[in-house]
Amino acid sequence: MPPIYSKALKTLFIHHAGQLRQTRTSPCEAKCLLGNSIQNVHTLLAEGKPDEALLWLHTRNPFPGITGRVCPHPCEDVCNRTGRDEALTIRSLERFAADHGRTATLKPLPSSGRRVAIIGAGPAGLSAAHFTALLGHAVDVYDRSPVMGGVPRQVIPDFRLPKDVVDREAAAAIEGNVTVFTNVTVGRDVFLADLLSRYDACLMAVGLWKERILNIPGKEHLQPAVAWLRRMTLDRENLAERDVAILGGGGVAFDCAFTAKRLNARSVHLLCLENESCMRVPADELRQAHDEGIILHPSLLSRSVCQEQGRFLVEAEKETAFSFDEKGVLHVEPAAEPPFHLDADFVICASGLMLDETVLNGMEVERTPRGMVQTDDRFRTSVPGLFAAGDMASGPGLVASAIRSGREAAVSLHRFLTGAEEDMEIFLDAEQQVTARPSGQPVTPHTVGAEELMNIDYHECAPRQLQPKRSFVPGLTFHELEGGLSSEQAMKEASRCMHCGHCMECGSCVESCPGYILEMGQDGPFVAYPSQCWHCGCCRIACPTGSIAYKFPLTMLL
Ligand SMILES: Cc1cc2nc3c(=O)[nH]c(=O)nc-3n(C[C@H](O)[C@H](O)[C@H](O)COP(=O)(O)OP(=O)(O)OC[C@H]3O[C@@H](n4cnc5c(N)ncnc54)[C@H](O)[C@@H]3O)c2cc1C
Ligand code: SF4
Ligand code: SF4
Ligand code: SF4
Image 1 (spheres, rainbow, N blue to C red):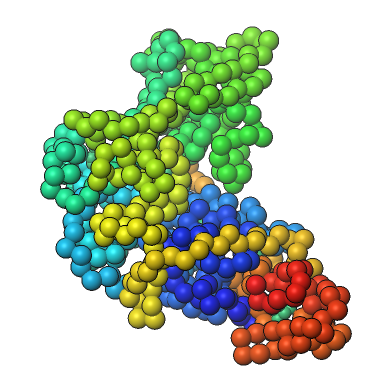
Image 2 (cartoon, helix red, strand yellow; image 1 turned 90 degrees about the horizontal axis):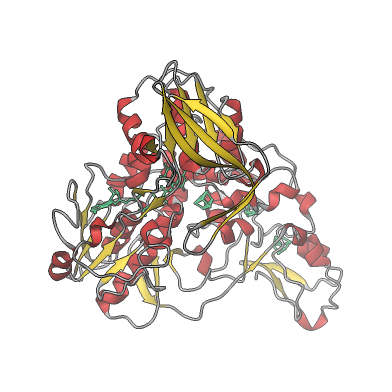
């Protein structure tokens, strides 16, 4: 049986003021960086309806093909299915819907006659452009690069995210009242003050592109990681017979290591502050690093780099603990061990990204202690009419968070342009027409944990459906590491969802009630004779989805 959702949950919401308009939710939905209606997507995929599933994803995110590949899927880490057998592959299902579903055309609100400039065509900027246009405003996007897509298009390597996926979704995102001007650097070719005078509002979403280079002796020998990755994406230089050292332990450092491997490097070493138990990359990337023979040197603080006979010698110090203060300054406790040495043909530095201030040229804008642009909860900067979203406001983040901030910034722009006082509720009606109205009181839903699924045996054990892996062969090949799920796999995997917190109309509660107090109605089970309930809790124990709260008077379909 498909789950029955509360009326509000059946609505395709782009934005609602509260967490979610429901009183119970699942851990996956509570944790999703985009606020996806994950269970609705699973219901539709289990029924073999990828077009409808994609529509649900598109209400929150114009880029499910990107997030379905590179989001670190915190939703899966908390899936209640883990207690039964294995977590659902929520991200693979998102990718399946994006790759197999047909994109529906959403109808925007009537034109407002207002014009907005957006600076940066990355995930935050394009998401903001897409939703701002749907809200009825004309949008011009400026980007200094020749292509749209930001870091996912220019830097994330093809073996994790093929360029054609980004191009396909970026092109669809700007359909409608959006014009994109590439090869325009704001702060050099055109200035913020000029844009602010020509448009009704401006949103900056330029990300973080200035590379932090370790301030150590020999720093001039270090190659900045993002610039190197960007170059290698285009040049595919052959690194045969060369040893590569990478200083850094985050995702960028690992991308450099995987790339160097694919470019035939003889050896790839990664030196980082973190120890293996607290690496800043998902477990699957750490596993991949081991599988591909990348040599990790944890708990090291790089001290110097010097050049010797055409090679570079890195000296590092072993440490026992490290931390960063609120200004981002590093504090380290050294270990009483002799220095560590490593020599390599070249050394890449992946020690963080900062705001490139070019965009702000000629404009005083308040900044955070870490140098990001200061915004309030509506993405407004200290300059009237100027908004900021994505990594440049939040600090280094993730693609999904940048997309969410772009979507929410679009709603803030809409409120600013229309002078709306109250927060808005924005949704699609049956004709896929965008509709907006003031929000009611927000609701913070209860997240249903595994311990609340008392009849978990109702859900048969079933193996997790995995995406086919393509084995890594060194030799300048950047083919995608994982294929997508097949249609059959996607249906099987989506059917594993236990729909935590949502009624599946299974009837177990009605059958289990010793007092015949519950009945099955058109909209699912209901308490037919509340005054006769003796609070035995049999219904709650029988419920396989944790949809019934043990709270009296007894209510159903919470
Ligand atoms: C190597 C690497 C790997 C990553 N891997 C992942 C991952 O696997 N998963 C994940 O979730 N996140 C990952 N991230 C983080 C993620 O890419 C960012 O959080 C996200 O791209 C931020 O989006 P954004 O729109 O704020 O900025 P960006 O993606 O940086 O886009 C900003 C855009 O602004 C343009 N721009 C900059 N300055 C100007 C200017 N002055 N004028 C005009 N245009 C300008 C740029 O050309 C760019 O197109 C990775 C980051 C890096 C660097
Ligand atoms: S966007 Fe990320 S957190 Fe949200 S459902 Fe997709 S993989 Fe999970
Ligand atoms: S079983 Fe389904 S609803 Fe429950 S946490 Fe996992 S994916 Fe979410
Ligand atoms: S036991 Fe009752 S409340 Fe729970 S899922 Fe089945 S019909 Fe719905």
